[in-house]
Image (spheres, rainbow, N blue to C red):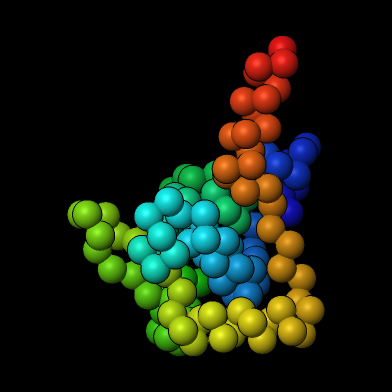
Length: 125
């Protein structure tokens, strides 16, 4: 959750666990219209974590992703000229292990749900 006034709003970067990054990447992949194995853009991953996409967020979050990549839990590749990130099979296993241990993997509202909520509020207003 972010420290913003509403839990659904994007906020500044705050440190998160590796397991939460894996959970956010998993959800972002599942919500990807190009398919689960395609991968996700950096900006989408940041949004699924509930952070504002800003240089400071990238500066603070990128080393954590680099560590997860070095551990073989995530990977990135080029797709249609963009760098996309995705979980590896080891990353999915690590996430499943965190879920079995009942680690706190609560994510903020997804970008899709945020858009739907805002559209309904605009239509009702």
